[in-house]
Length: 294
Image (cartoon, rainbow, N blue to C red):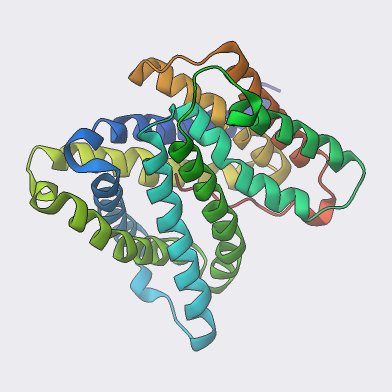
C-alpha cells in the first residue's frame, strides 16, 4: 500500500516542483527588466533554452516535410509571442494576476470545444474572475491597462500554441518542442537586440539568464514530461490549473507583490473554472495537455 501511495504522490510532487520552478524563473526574469527590458530578457531566455533543448532532444534528427513546416512555424511564433507578451505584462502587473489572465487562453480552447450545460458554470466562473481583475470590475490595485492587454495577448498566443502544438507534436514528437523554441528564438531575438543592444552581451547577465532558461524551460519541461507519463491526463490538467496560485505566491515571496483580497478571489475563480472544466471534460476531450511554456 505504501509503495502504491508513493507512486501516486511522487508524480504529483514532481508536477508541483515544476510549477514552482516556472514561476520562480518568471520572478528571476523580472529582475533583469531594469537592465535589458522584457524584450531582451525574453530573447536571452529563448536563446539559452534553444541550446539546452537542442542538446537534450537533438532536433536535427526530426524529418521535416512540406506539410509539417507551416504548423511548426506557427507553433514557434505562438510560443515566442506568448513568452514575449507575458514578460511585457510583468513590467506593470503582478505575476499572479498575469498568469491568471493568461489562463483565459487555454481555458477558452477547452470550453469552446464543449457544448454541455455544466460548461456554462465554468464560463461564468472564469468570466467572474476576469471581471474582478479587469477595470470593469473596479478591482483594487488599479491594474495597468497595457499590462492587462499584454497578459490577455499572451493568453491568445497560448491558445494558438495549444492548437498548432498538437499538430507539431503529432508530426515530430518531443523534437517538435525544441524546433518550436528555435523558431521562437529566431522571432524574438531581433526584437530583444533592437531594444537592449550590446547590453545583452554583459557577462554578469549570462548566469541569471541561464538560470531563467533552466528554471522556466529545461527543468519544468522535463519534470512535467515525467508527470505526464505517470498521471492521468485529467489529473494532470486539474493540478496544472492551480498555476496562477503558484504565480501569486512566487510574486509575493520573491518580488514582494501583495495582492488584495478581491484579486485573490478573482484568481480563485479562474482556478476553479479551470479545475471544473478539466474534471467534467468528456472522455474524448481528455487528451494529454501540452506543457505551458511561460
